[in-house]
Amino acid sequence: MTVRSRTLISFALMAGLLLAVALGQSWSVALAIFNLCLISAVMALGVNIQWGYAGLFNVGIMGFAALGGVSAVLVSKAPVVEAWSVGGGGLFVSFVCVALTITAAIFTYRKLHPGRKRALYISLIIIIGYFVTRYVADPAIGAIESVDAARTGYLGGMGLPIVFSWIVGGLFAAGAAWIVGKVALGLRSDYLAIATLGISEIIIAILKNEDWLTRGVKNVSGLPRPVPYEIELQHSDWFLRLVERLNSDMLSTLTSTDKADALQKLVIEYSGIFVKLCYAGLFASVLIVILILSAKALNSPWGRMMRAIRDNEVSASAMGKDITARHLQVFVLGSAVVGVAGAMLTTLDGQFTPGTYNPLRFTFLIWVMVIVGGSGNNLGAVLGGFVIWFFWIEAEPMGLWLVDALTSGFGDTSFIRTHMMENAQHMRLFVMGLVLLLVMRFSPGGILPEVIRRPKKNV
View (cartoon, rainbow, N blue to C red):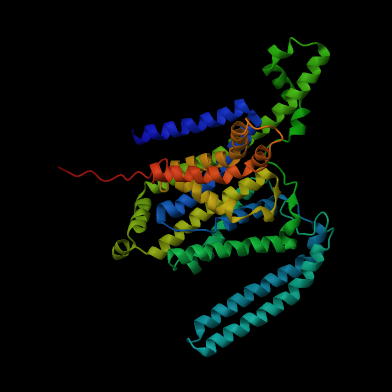
């Protein structure tokens, strides 16, 4: 089977599974899964850029996704004017203190020779800067968090369209990745994994506890949408006429009263589907753009150089390549893509909840997508995002159906049947493990393995 045929068949089967959900459950459920599959595919592409291109083992995906999520709050929410008036000035002064502390520490580091004197001066600068910053920042933060704490208690954002947060989320994640990369990319792969996981946990801890910035665990809800609201569609004449036209054959057989009731139910159902289709169009556009750019990068001289570094760093270094600089470059690019996906996910949810960011959902599940789809293959990463998220969502109803079928011979009051039905939701982890084992057994390179194109020899 050719690579092209395998790719087409794989995506066709995935489309068939989504169609089966649409026909067996509902179009609304299928579109909800499809939208999350699109976002998961973007995240998987970001990880594939780091691991598939350069062999960087980043286990801090959760932190970069969270930075994308917080960007949606900082961009789209309206500023809280009273909070800015009581604490904005103090926070600005505290940021100036931090900047002066960092500048003084760097200046001292460069001007003094290595030794105890330099270490002592830098330590004194950092300690003094810390206490001065806290002295200025603490009263400002307290004042901000006391402003209508039940509804706000934070500074808010810039009040811009939330779509801009997708770009800002990528920039936030890229900036954090640059700082992390400068510190950690010189480490061995296993130490890099530990470092990135620890730093991502620090990011989540900050977002959970700094209420003045993100409301912490009180969450930020009601984020504005880039698509219409269902209630607006349900009261729009053009949408009512569209639904009536699409269902004219069915409605024509009903009486006036029944027709009005049926039309109202259809409008409610179709409004939800229409909104999900709008989201799907936006997310698919982002995925396609990132996929095209990733493919061009992979097939360019830069991509071939990255794979050469991945396969043999010693040889690449001997050829004059700056390994650390290239690793930093690809680490920043991959993290930026994850940040974009994190902002997209928060946009879809309509709320930012720092407590939901955990390594299982936002790190290890994304890694499974890349491994199952095929690391080093952009289309494989996209397919892995669809396959794994589909089974992650559908494993529970599939498990309930399977357990119900297996225990149908027992009575409804049977302890075995009751116990099995109550624990059927745990089939999700079993299904994930089974999918991963089957792929690793029969296709170790993933469903769509990386394609190595070797130059033809001249005869």
